[in-house]
Amino acid sequence: MTLFGKKIPIFFSLVIWFIVWELIGQAKLSTIIPPFSRVVVAGITILPTEKFSTAASISLRSFAIGMAFALVTGIPIGVMMARVESLSKILGMWVNIFVSAPISALVPILMAVVGIGETTVVVTVLLFAVFVIILDTQVGIKQADKSLVEMARSFGARRYQIYTKVLLLSALPEILAGVRLGAIRGVKGVVIGQLLIAILGVGELFELYSKHFLMEEFWALVIIVFMFAFTVSEAIASLERYVEYYASTR
Amino acid sequence: MMPAEAIVEARGVGKTYDGGVEALKDVSLALSRGRLNTLLGPSGCGKTTLLKIIAGLIPPSRGEVWVKGKKVDGPGPERAFVFQDFALLPWANVLRNVAFGLELRGMPKEQRDDLARKQIAEAGLSGFESSYPHQLSGGMRQRVGLARALAVDADIILMDEPFASVDEQTRRKFQEELLDLLRHKQKTVIFVTHSIEEATYLSDQIVLLSPRPGTVSKIIHPNIERGGRNPDEIRRDKNYLDVVDEIWQILKHYVV
Ligand SMILES: Nc1ncnc2c1ncn2[C@@H]1O[C@H](COP(=O)(O)OP(=O)(O)O)[C@@H](O)[C@H]1O
Ligand SMILES: [Mg+2]
Image (cartoon, rainbow over all chains, first blue to last red; front, top):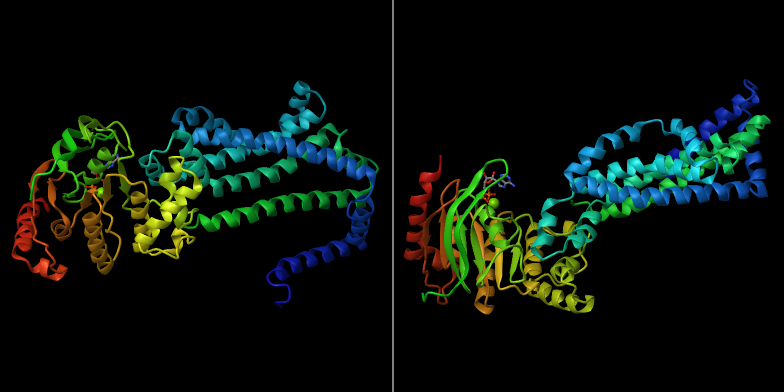
């Protein structure tokens, strides 16, 4: 079938999973798994409610602010670590620990330090996202073609020009890959941060649905959050493909 | 040939790399203005190192280099480099690559694009302005690299084995174009090669380097009479063949 081009196989496997889900739900094997069709209906009902849009906008704002901080700190730190040997010796170990560490465990400490509120969630997003951005930026800059830097120097490039016109552009594919992974982790950060605080945004909704055992709404929200993460990641990925095209001969 | 004024001078230049590799030892030479000077020697003898020291890209460990009466302490606008691996920006099209030296100098876009278009036309690349490097052949990429160096209008063009990675026909075509260019523009060229024929065919002066650590083992002025003869005639010329043989007699002792 070529009617929908390449989309068919992915779409197909999803359909199969949804059918399996529907069957398990209809068979009433477990109370935490309602039929997929009922989840879809629940999703359609909660989407237009004011409660949802308020929660979503609070969550989105925390996500956006946290990601913005992750970008403006992560990329410069990654660049400096790649260029300054001593800095990478000092910070490298910590970045490597934190990139794989369970950041969620730190949220309670954060709550104690910065209080229970939006700031905690923003910092959680930052911590979830920043380390992978640092790491990938560092790799990208390190791998940048030395002879391009030399070329720029031979034509009298100033130091800032070497960064803006050669190194950053050269590392763009890796930086974007880091940003994409960071954004996916950032979505996790919002949800986990708000869940642990349980009084804000989507986290509050999750808490509400699970407390009242509203499993259809709960799963609908899970799917909505997944879809958001997927959309953000795909948007960055398409940017990556565009950049890869021009960087294909590096 | 009349002795010309020295535009580049190396005085006792030595280079020892961080790892302890001594690449150059006590190199002194004078290169004439408006001439094509070749650095010739076995691979690994320090030709690239010497060229980059003259370019101001790496500092010498000992000695000094003077260009146009000034001591070199970094790159300068009177020198432009053509790289062996082309060093083109993969994300920029031909126009932007050729204009890149001017862009770094802060020349307004319209003005630098105009200059770059002229160089692109002279390099025979018209119509490829918006192509990207990976869409071009090796020969065309090197033309872009040369056009970029010519666009900044430097007096001295430093070329590191520029024709090493193109096929023989393209190589010979490039050689003719280079000689043509020198006839019309007052450029001083410092040309690195490991090909005896190429050095003899092109050069006004050949600096023969010994194996590592590179020292000047001999300076040769081929004095090939060109006067309207075609390339094949020149390559059969007795004087040309004698110079090739003279260099070979020296270089063959360096082959292990
Ligand atoms: N950055 C470097 N660090 C250490 N050794 C180097 C470096 N660059 C070149 N060398 C060494 O210096 C010697 C001369 O190198 P090079 O100037 O590239 O020679 P050529 O261009 O004549 O082939 C070689 O032995 C090479 O391995
Ligand atoms: Mg070399």
